[in-house]
Image 1 (cartoon, rainbow, N blue to C red):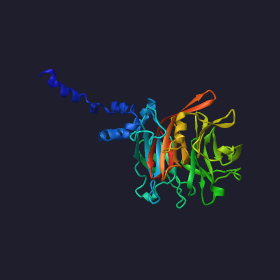
Image 2: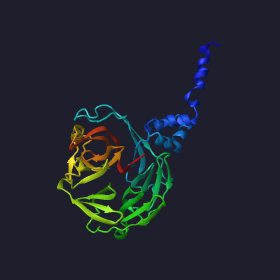
Image 3: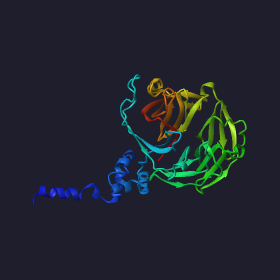
Image 4: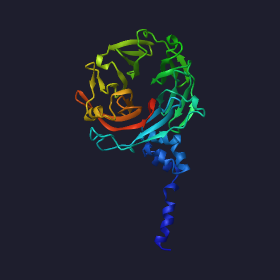
Length: 376
């Protein structure tokens, strides 16, 4: 038998599938999670390895963890909401070429994968808001017509659900956020004076009510809320407030200028606050000057004028996506409901902050989003 006759057998013995699980796992841990849904279809073995918690421990050990965006979309009033994971391709070209273009990027630059339902009964689907705790999502609350105390937990590594500890009262349209290994919930309830805030200790998995001193003048009907410097901060229509968990008290931080009356969302990246207004302005807070300053950049100006993806919005959310600014919004200029998403790199240049849009596209239409959250 000559050497050529031996080649097929040698190739087969050294094929990728013949490698031990530990080696394949180490290789997969270095591949972007964007490719995991497709790779999981290769074989049952790949599917098992890709859904194993050990793989995510390996990614953490070799520092290849990636943030992932999860969306809760509702396609009609009569249908329950559905959860999806959104993966964006890295694109190294100019994103927006001409103002008159009807699109910003090719249609195949992202993948939107449905997450398995949390319940066999779709009427029990968690409705509204979520918060990320490591690689898990806590989905909390209900709707106005169906307040709920239910908590469901999604393991983002395996896309499996389990029941969490129920809240003390049924709530709807909740505000939820993580601070010092505790989940704080602020929302409507049947007895708002007593039940406005409750907190979950993640370690003990127990809820308790917390006091809310100084909330009498707090406008709870219109505000956007987040965590900054160890306090819960809320921006309302005329003032910004801070809640100190140790003192259980709200206090006024500052009066807001008129141009910030309609802030849609805000988040924190590298200890700097960024906000997004309903007119489509992206601003950052200069703590030395005590003022909100426009984020500069030609991409932002072009998208602001773009007739398809105008940044003027009816609703928006902002998140820290691995140090990048993630904005999701529904433009006011579009008929129906189309959801846009953009990822922006930020750069400090002297006393200015500049933004460069790395990715932007319409990810869904004829629906609206009730929640989006970043998990690892």
